[in-house]
Length: 199
Image (cartoon, rainbow, N blue to C red; front, side, top):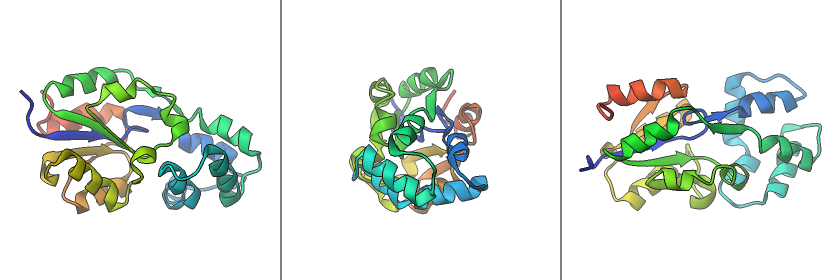
């Protein structure tokens, strides 16, 4: 019998190896710190519209190139962009399947049709998929978390969320969700055990 608790995972950097920061850094004709890259990414109009499902990959590429002053064409950018998520970390599928015997398990991820299409097996891996380009809500906006609570009809204190970006953790905590910062997949299982969610 399941616990009544909900576990939500971010994908990139948590369950999926994400080389986006490194990949973007190789395209930039200037230097940015990790903090600056992620702050700019989360605030980017092109990224937000693409990850909310509002624009096509082609429009996203053109807008992103202009916004970030990249020195390459849209098709070349999309080709590179598509490769940023590498695949699930070893052990991630097994961990999720084991957790599903005890809890409702879902993903809550900012993503897009280009990256989502690369992982068709994710649709069946989780009980629920809250992916931004399909829901229309992006983290760290409060609406992204509130949408999950409405859809699952659960109280915030029954939900545990694991993400690698502090901005998303802080936003989840602001709506009452138990949010845990994990900087790599290796930290996920110990964090679950610390919360009493995995035995």
